[in-house]
Image (cartoon, rainbow, N blue to C red; front, side, top):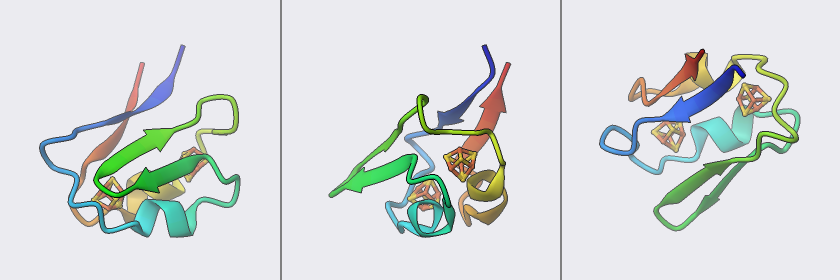
Length: 59
Ligand code: SF4
Ligand code: SF4
């Protein structure tokens, strides 16, 4: 199943992906980002927004 994967070595915890997600699927708690797959529509907004290229679609 396609999903958004997080490269935790790249993530800088900036919160940009959380801010851009219209579906409330990203959650950042201190230094830990979670993507809730039940809410994610694979719209790609977070992938395009991430300044660290930490997010990508995993097939
Ligand atoms: S936008 Fe990228 S660097 Fe920022 S919290 Fe999200 S995944 Fe991490
Ligand atoms: S792909 Fe879209 S819906 Fe899924 S977490 Fe990123 S911004 Fe939210």
